[in-house]
Image (cartoon, rainbow, N blue to C red):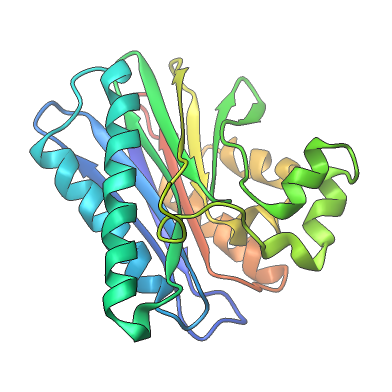
Amino acid sequence: MKAAYQTDIGHQRKQNQDRVAVFTNKLGNQLMVIADGIGGNRSGDIAAEQTVATLGSQFKKRPPQTSMEGIRWFARETQLINNKILAQSKRNLRLQGMGTTMVATITFKDAVVVANIGDSRGYILHQNLLTQITVDHSLVNELVKTGDISEDEALKLPQSNIITRAIGISPDAQVDVNRFELNEGDQLLMCSDGLFKTVSKEQIIKVLELPIPLEEKCAQLIKMANDAGGPDNITVLIGINSNQEG
């Protein structure tokens, strides 16, 4: 899979607590991961940095061989990272309260395995249809699921930044892991909430369908989020399941 990514501080934050990376192992499989640090000034960037770096290191040392192994691998590694961050928070007062969301994928020949915790998202664009393949662990999404509010209303509520699960917050990481098939030409989009809370699904689809390099698609989506006010850090990663970049 060909991939590109970009991250930006946005217009209203003092620091960028998002982290993003792509790792390739000796099998030729790729791990793509975005972590959005939480806890305000309480070292959310450290939790995000450690999550991305540790996951990448383990992926290169002991990678899963198949997509089914990938499901178990994500569950195990996420819990180990969670334990590590919790232990650091207990030892260091300055780090107390730090945590991070995570969305990560491993691409195999026949499928992609997606793991998420928190409200960073994953999508697949297949034949002009953009499908969210992660479920937000957030207070407003709980209200959406019960039918109390609509998805559009959820984005406008001031409580939209309250998440119900994260790495480093509780002893049980509770990561969701799922497997999806990828077809030739499908695009994989991963992002932090700084994108989808400011740029509509329809706008995202239009950019993804443009016949331009992936790097330019990332840059356009970042610009659109900033043009809409850029209230949060913005991170975008796009991959295409094809030999062509277009």
